[in-house]
Length: 177
Image (spheres, rainbow, N blue to C red):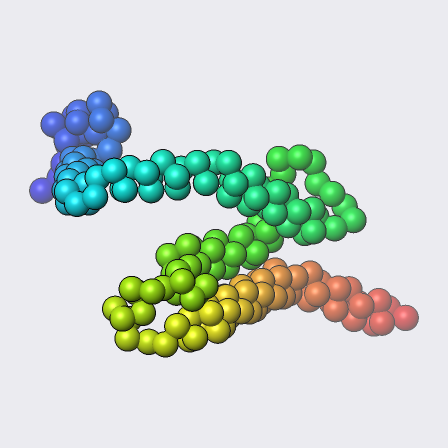
C-alpha cells in the first residue's frame, strides 16, 4: 500500500514540518519534564529555584566566557601557520572539544565526590571518597587518548591516497630515467 503525496500525513507534515510521531514524542517529553518539575518543586521549592537561578548565573557569567576563550585558544592551536579565515570550519578542534565536554560534564555531575565534598553522598555510593578523583582523571585521560587515536587514524586514512599518488609518481619518474 503506497502513501499518496497529497494525503493527510503529507498535509500535516507540510503544516507542522515533521511527522505526527515527532509531535507525539515532543509532547511526551514535555509531559515528562513537567512531571519531573512538579516532583522536584514538591520538596524545597525555594532551594530549587535558588539553585536554578544560581546555576544559570554561574553558566552565563563564568562558564560561558571560560569555555569560549578556551575554544578560541584551541582553534588557534589547531590553525597552525596557515590561519584560515574567521568562521572557517576546523573539524580537528572537535578532537579536543568532545573529550573536554564529556570530562566537564562528568565533573559537573560528580564534583562533590571528586572534590571530596560528598558528605551524605558517600553513604549512598558505598565507596571511599578517595576513589573519585583518580577515576575521573583516568576517564578524562582515556577520553583524550581515544580522541587522539581517532584523529591520528583519520588523518592517516585521509592522507593515504595522497601518499599513494606520490609513490606512483616516484615510480614513474624512476621508470623514465
